[in-house]
Length: 553
Image 1 (cartoon, helix red, strand yellow):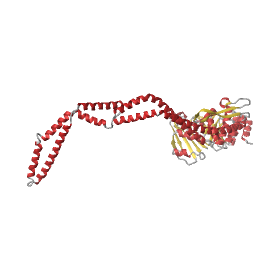
Image 2: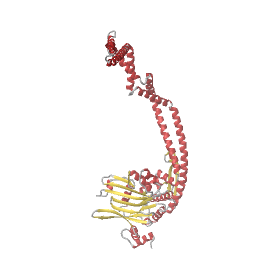
Image 3: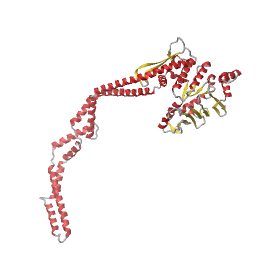
Image 4: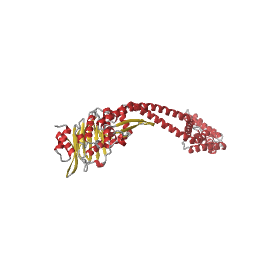
């Protein structure tokens, strides 16, 4: 429920504060007094576009704030999901717009994106203005109306889930078909690429081993000569250098009795001689094992060139990468070979899901069909009350050829206000006043079936007057038994039916023009309605008529 509204420095409004009570509240005022400005500020608060021109001239920023009692709406989850403080009862929305065009939004003093204000605002207040009458011709609005009356959230959810699965399956099938078409072109190329890698018979560590062997073969003569020279440097001719080391060790052993340190030195020298001898033997063995083989060198170079060509061609860093590519190509070819069976399986899945979707769609359609009967009867009764005794209404559902996200049906709202006039779509045949009354009747129906917190009617009475206006006011009063109703009106018959009455007016002085709003006392209310009846010059008849409308003696 809408509790209060505060507006500071918005357009012509310097400061405006209004507290709203439950029931039916009316707001009146001369054209241009600022009623639309007040609604514009409320629109910004509810997530609408904020612009610098909204800020009152000379002010640094404008601030719009409203408090709502949301204890009965069951929206605790929104606050928890967005980590917003919530006491379980009150929700305060605030929007600030600077003269530079920057804006900030708050829910219970917690900064939030403007989109969050819009999301929450749609749950706490419904602003119905003249242009909203165009909703009567929109399929989504008509279906929403049926669903509210049908209370079919479970059926809608089941259908939506089935629709999502079917659409996903259809997209998968489409992707498979494109892949199959592309595969016919790519298949031969993939086979060629794979065959080239397979025929190369690559081994994971082959490149490193071949590069080592290639380096050895390219420098075989140089390596053999160096090994031989090193061995000769150690052995000399006939191993005389090692023999000399042996004799040196023996000399040290001969004086060990007189010089104990000589024994350790002799042992070390002998160990060194043995190690050096082993090294010389290994050098000779290595030298003997190396033999320049031109045929093998050519074979290794050719193999390496093949590997390098493949690496460059496929932009691979190693043989392991090439083998991984080959495995991927093989898997792609296997999928292409199995594509026909995959397509058949995907088609069967789509058909099964479509059958399930149509089944759930039929259930949803049935709930809407029952609701359509209720809507027809309720609207007919309401419109009789609103001065359309000969109205004819048919709310039918036409099957769609292809299922849509909203269901299997296209809603058709046919209407005729007069006898012997064929029914046609309501948006094409009804006058402005007739559409206003139809929308009011719909709102009354919705209010009885849905927990609406607050409805603001912005000059919904356009095109009606006199008795019809009074009947519309009575219906708004009936709606107010189910939810809070605010109505901005120019008609005295409607203004007189409100439980509370506010007047918007302008004041001009040397500093400029400002808009104000004030709650009217019973006496002030008589004067305001009399003014609405007779104009600036209030006659005794107008005052008497105003009192009669207000039910005052």
